[in-house]
Image (cartoon, rainbow, N blue to C red; front, top):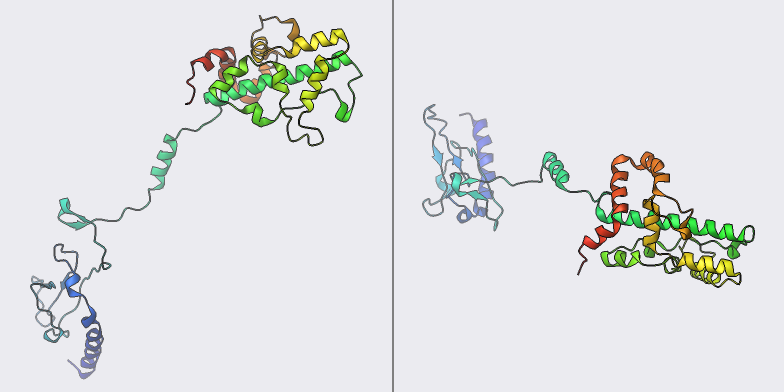
Amino acid sequence: MSKRNNNKYSDKIHNLDSLIPDMPLNSFDNSSEDDLSVSIINRDNMNENLDTDYKLSSKETNFNKNNIDFHNYKIEKINLFIEGQKPLIDKKNNNKLLKKRGRKGEKNDIKDNKKKKIHDKFYDDNLTKKCKNIILKYALIFINEKIEEKYTDDIGYGKFKKELKIINQKNKVKSTVNVDRTFLDKNLKDIFSENISARFNNFPETYNKTLIESLINEEDKEKKIYFTELFNTTFFDCLQYFIDDQVNNEKLEGFTKFSAIKESLLKKHGKKYIDVLEYFLKNYKDILNNKRSRK
């Protein structure tokens, strides 16, 4: 070997000498061949059929850096673990190291998402709210039409206009089984006497309540009788009149029928949804009575 090569290897030995004293030899585990394997090959006597593995062991081998000739050996493979952390080992599979499991693949994520049910408009609680809202919508329209009809051109303007406003959404859509059951027998006076929506910030919250009181206490006897009977009409009375063409009610004559708006609803929501909605409207009371209330 040339002098130049000797200097080259001597530099390498010098570098390794600075590292070897700090190596925690007793921290390695020989129970697995993948823990720490050092294959040492004699370059001067290399044989194709001979493969010498040199394994380090704190118990069996007295490691001394001075006894190793680094001119003739090289480190083939070394696996180090973080001190204090145990490697994952599969004892059933020849004590081989287990690979860490990462996040699920996109395919698994897609499968999981498909399994999750979407709480959409077809759920019974959403259909119940829809039934409730649609009746209240047309009840409000009907009452205001009757006010305009009875008072002709004398309904007033601005804050003094005789016109019911949309009630607060919290009261309108609040929905539990017990609340909805009670709501069936609630009359229009109590329903629309709730605080009005916050969008009407130029009107007092109790605007509807004040207007209804003035209508049922009207000095005109005919108007007083009519509005008293109208506001005593229940939510369920309106529902029955709305969904069933065979139901007649003088107090609700002129109230919108489901059959009159069904075509426009089909165009907007599609046949599947409207068929389900119609079923809920026709069986609304029975559906509520068959539901279990929350404790």
